[in-house]
Length: 391
Image (cartoon, rainbow, N blue to C red; front, side, top):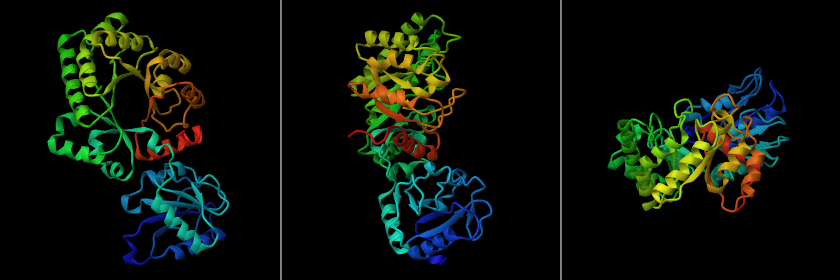
């Protein structure tokens, strides 16, 4: 490939069968048609000859996509043959079929020159991810200003910005100005800090430290334009056995937080984490709403409900639905808080869809992937599970 093509976008051409044959012949024809418009890498299963990268016997794109260096990051993936490779849902780009493959974003026309033209057009449009405008996506403030800044700038993502201690202590006026420039025009929510924070601590010094950290987060959340902020209770069932006393301390500590957020036009929601059942959330929401004079809502984290609690998802839903203002969407098999994309674990997504249809006011939906690859897979997972979102 000519060295002066190095600045062009990369397109991956994925074969479904090893060895020489019609797929490799087609890939070479498409490579020739794309010459001067895009650089191509031909990928195939173990045993393939004439390819640039072998993907193993299972034909799994996942490891290649997750470990891909920036200079080889695909702007489009084109599948040749009938088999769709595993891991395709992790692709940060349009996924196109050229041949009998089904399940891709688009099918290319048969002639190589027309296929190349259609591929370049799809590359310009980007991936067709219908849920992108309808969800929030978690992103720590430090990552927004660091490793995921390019992603946040290039993709029109509505962000739930995580405000951890490191970011709150290190972001000065210049960093905040940069963050606000990146997120301008987006719908923004915030996740308040929670690591090692116990606002309802019985020890007044510990409660005061938590309150100070949360006050810093409120100031930052409002400066970023957040319309909703998510907070954890810091409830541990083996330590906090008197739920009523815990709720009273929580209300005392969180009343200034709820009032400050409300004064800035930002609602507060309480998220289930380690609670074994909804009782602590219900008690804290009621006590805090009464103490602060501010209506407080719930954030139902379906992954936490599945991995940390002994209560069924329908029971969590019934307890929270009257004040359900947000949901955190990720999946797991029940053994750990894995934060897999929706559809990758054992959570009943059909039940959630039915519950959402029954709500007159829909909650904010927030995806919580822990890798960029799982971000793309989460968007594709929602469309596969729920279809395209209602307008």
